[in-house]
Length: 391
Image (cartoon, rainbow, N blue to C red; front, side):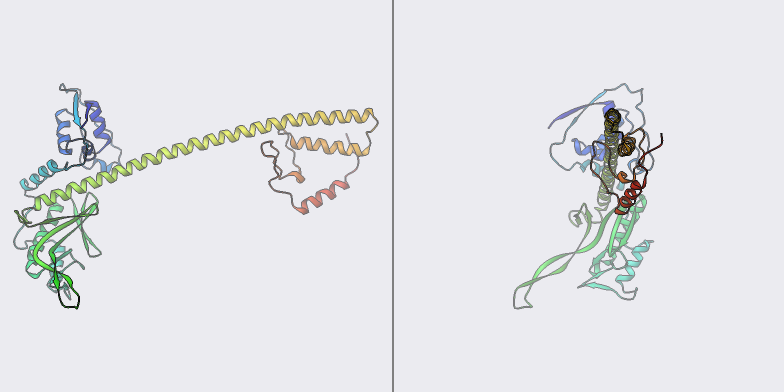
């Protein structure tokens, strides 16, 4: 595995640019270990909730203290392949839950949460009717997602009551929706349930072999994290004894998912800003090019208009010298000079017959012909004009 050397300033910039949990994935260290390292080097780190508030409040990074006199360089080992980087953080948070008595389970319901009361009433048939799955009772329709044998009801209710109270103590929440229960941690919904474990047994009720699922009497707590199920059950420790570790796992995963979501949103915002900047530059370039082409076209038109007037003057001079300056020529001369004025970009007189013609040399095509009525009446009026003009 590679080693990356970072100065104190580099590490300070990193922890204010990327959540610690995401940085820990890059290096062979947990986010808790990274936080301790920053503390030793007097590097301020973002407070809890900093990344959640970032889209609303732009908080400037806390500057480095000039009183630090320790090592200015740290060596971090890059992570080569994925492993369980949460073990240390999970262990420390579990101990915090235990030490502060955040998780407390009783054998009987003591001042239970309202959702627990509703779930109890549903499974005991006090809400009108009870819902069964074979031998098991469930309270998922209107209450918590619990599905157990009757003898496990009190255990399930006490366990879920402890989960709800631990969530509320940590500033989190619980909600039910569409027969599902969610622990809401840092605005991240993690689906949870308490169930009797099932096993498949063969049955011979048909002419062909088949199986069915039956409850084992052993319970488990499940959480769906990142589209995969994590399950806790009785083992060397009962499921109740594992609850501090369960709550620590839920909080860590909720925090990680929230940080990753905020990080993705931040990256999407950065990409959007870059895209808008590129689009603005592109639009400016296109306008610049269009303005240049327009100027170039007008310069060509101006030069051609000058050449056209020189030609008209020479044509008039030739007609006078050769005694061809008759009424027909005078009429043509008036028409030609009007066309030169129409074509000249400095004059741009209106010409109804050629109103929809592109005059620039870069776009010589006719974009939209004049209507037949316009052509008819313009031609008719033109023939009514006298064969001479006053000068």
